[in-house]
Amino acid sequence: MDWNQVTLEELASALKEVTWSAPRPVEEFFRSFSPPSQRALMGRLKNNLYYYRTNYLVILVLAFLVCFIRNPVALGSLVLVGLGTALCNDPFATSLNDNLLHALRKYAPRLVAKSRAKAGSDGVVGLHKRKRLYVLVLPRGLVVAALLLVGGLLVYWSHAVLTLCWAILLGVGLPLMHATFRLPNLKAKIASAREEFRAVWRGYQAELYNDHTHSM
Image 1: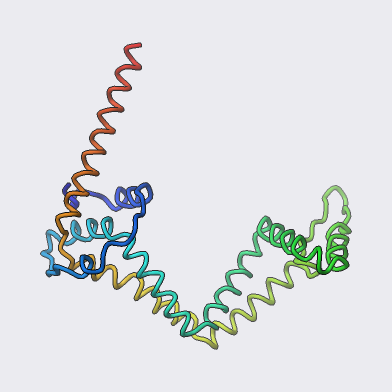
Image 2: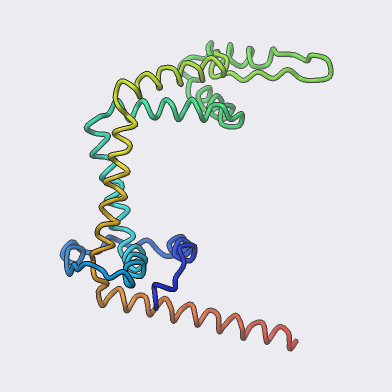
């Protein structure tokens, strides 16, 4: 398979459909490095990204874990901002409120009853039903504002954006460096040839099926 001819869209489609097996062995992963020529660069990148996909995913996850374990407040601040932003979506806010009420039903039945009564007391204004969303007994807008305010202050105080940038830089940069300098090995070439054969065979079978269908 000539990986230089494979488009990024085809690579993404292949990564979506292929089975994500266990990571390749460490001794294989750190073997046979060489600077690529300009002509071979893109082909090598695509080949290694496909063949070492699970190893690169592990590196990405480890990079985020290391960066945010060193700065857990940053992770919490990003979670607060993300939750506040997600609550702006009506279905998400409704689902979160229902799940919270279901979880608290055994421990705080009065609070649950009060919340349900509050949510059902909006009534009708003219021909339009006035719909207000709540998170427990608090209006959704108030919860969103509080989460975004607290999360934003924590993001600034904990340098969460800098931590996130470091996590992305390490989690994406290290795999790209490896994919650039790692020589495609024999197993990768055999796997590529096998995938190419399967693709050709699937196309051949589809062609035979279409011919059979038309003949009928």
